[in-house]
Amino acid sequence: MSRRRAIQHGLGATGAGVLLGAFATSRSASRAMQGSVATPARSPVELPQPRVLKSAGGELAVTLTATPATVDMGAPLPVQTYTFDNVVPGHTWEINPGDTLRVALVNNLPPLSHPEPMAFTRPHEWTTTNLHTHGLHVSPAGNADNIFISIPPGETFHYEIAVPGDHPSGFYWYHPHRHGGVAQQVRAGMAGAIIVRGELDEVEEVRAAKEQVMVLQAIELGDELQLLDPIPRPDEHQAFYPREHILYTINGVLNPRITMYPAEDQRWRMVNAAEGKFMSLQLEDHDLNVLAWDGLTLAAPEAAGLVLLSSGNRVEALIKAGQPGTYRLVLTPGSSQKPNIPGMPAPAHPSATPVATAAPTAVPAAPASPTAMAEMPGMAPMPGLIDIPGELAVRPILAIEVVGDGPEMSLPAALPAWNPPMLPIAKTRTFAFTVERGPDNIEFLDFGVDGHAYDRDRPPYQVKLGTAEEWTLINGIDPRYPDHAHVYHIHTNPFKITRINGRTLARPLWRDTFVLSGKNGDSITFESNFEDFTGKFVEHCHVLTHEDLGMMSAIEVIE
Image 1: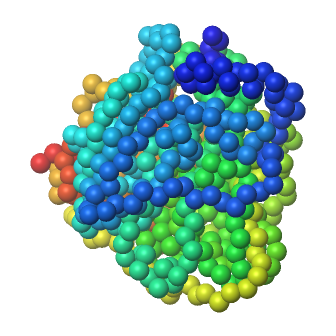
Image 2 (image 1 turned 90 degrees about the horizontal axis):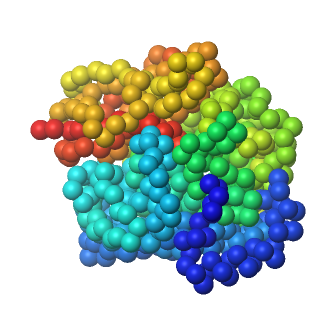
Image 3 (image 1 turned 60 degrees about the vertical axis):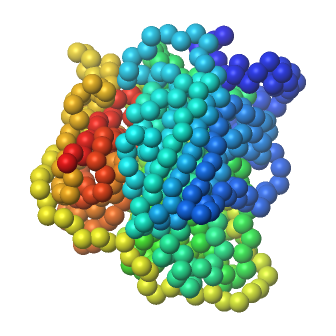
């Protein structure tokens, strides 16, 4: 089996035979879709909603099965990938503050057929898995949100996660977080949404709006829409994570449709559940009236013409439908592992053939809004991280058909803002995301934090429980090399961003995931309260290839 072997060897004898036979008769279709895989194979379907599993009696108990599956995403061929429970995305979990989340995670992914010794900061053991509840303020210890747990193929682990009674209501998500296989499993589609009900849901105008959960993913596949294995030791013409096509899907479907009537409001709850793609979203002739970022509610809705979701970010917005017609939600050229916000430098491949979701179309650039994330310059690929030409093309991912009539709806004037008081700052810290190279200053070695690639044996940075700290994260990219943006995420506790590139913000931003723009010396400064939980967890780049390649470090909260 080649180094680019697909996952079909893990589908079982019967399934593999059926799939191989089907694809043997579909090679002409495969050739025909080269460079345009995302053109849907059928008319747009109404946006499906993931199945919702709701807590009852203070508990949500689920069995979550990691398994290979064949999934119909509306592409010319069925998709062979890794899934949770045979669907992409996984089911939505709906819980309340004070609930206990019990998850039996069953790993039915295939064992690697020829495991070879692999460096800890290279793709390795990518069918071993675990679970992370991204954004939840819960314990990182024991059998709670503990990402140091390993669940090999064929084994089951039982999680028990107690959600605090004062947990903020909002939109969160779950995904695997086993170092060495995070990027592989997330790019395959293994992710699902988490809803914590609460105060925001009781705002009259929010409660009246139809709710749409939107799990935005970038499924990375081979030429027959099969998940390809990573390449731990790529040559100069290969990537660690090979791909021929990317399917930009919403709730597992290419180019779905939403129907609204003029003046209707809908509540869109969006998560960028891609491995590392930035998703710069613009809705033609409409604003997104943002209610919350990363599950943390604003004081009032903020109109934004364009929002940038880094990998892991969530945004909730009310959309007020305009005049009858068809409008498109598009990914602008800010969408890629090489982000380029309108008005910034041109994409690296401006004339390349698009390879995902749909043919590119001209979309006027929207001015940056207060709600949009920081502007970022273009980036060039790092060695071993090869981008597909055309990834930066503008492309629609959702159609909104405004028809009919109904009662006019209104936007709320105020929201139950999440803005807890900060504890006194006990300590400051400055650290950097870095890229390590060989003696020739060309060979890529590792990503790292302060010049150190992730090492599970390195003592963690320690913080005292019941204190707050102020940290400044610097982009330590070598200035001789192209700009390279990162995405900062820390587990367990959100943070309040006070300065970007040394400039004090007029209004701080609460997040659990935030972009670090790409120039050497760029920085973000933020404060965080370390309350409620002791234990060890991690901070890392949420471009998950960067994390698997070493850009992660451990934090420990102690008494």
